[in-house]
Amino acid sequence: MVLKKCNKCKEEKNIEYFHNNKTRKDGKDTWCISCSNEYNIKYYAENKELKKEASKMRSRKHRKKAEECALTYFNTRVSKCTEFTFLGTDLLKMYENTPKCPYCGRIFESHMEVEIEHKIPKSRGGTSELSNITLSCGNCNRLKYMMTDEEFNIFLIDYTKRLISHLNLDDRAQG
Image (tube, rainbow, N blue to C red; front, side, top):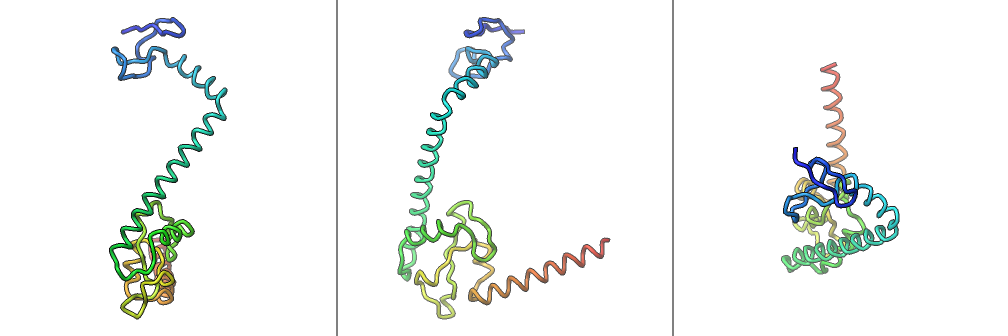
């Protein structure tokens, strides 16, 4: 059994009672786990407001970075299509106002999951103006294909009814 002396309580304890620390020669902290925990509890109790403020600052910084990243992504998507009459900032506002798929209701976890969807497909006379654009998940975008919003909503309702009916039949067959 390897022993180590804690610099705080001055007790010799088994080396397993010390946290790992790669910066130390022996690979362990200078304080034992008990002393470290005691110090941390006291420190955080005395510095709650400071901790809250630091957390807010990290959150603001993260939110700003995520927004910059999303804007870059939307600007790139918009610049690839010369037909679009709007900017990436317009898509970012749309994404922030409604961060979920308008068809299935799935909440987007990231701007990378968003696809630009024409409410009335271009193949059916739809335009690439912002009023004809919505942001959807990839599954709904592919499933909608050449349907208008109205046709796709009717399709989803019908599909859901058939799926529920099918599941109920399966349950009865097994029961």
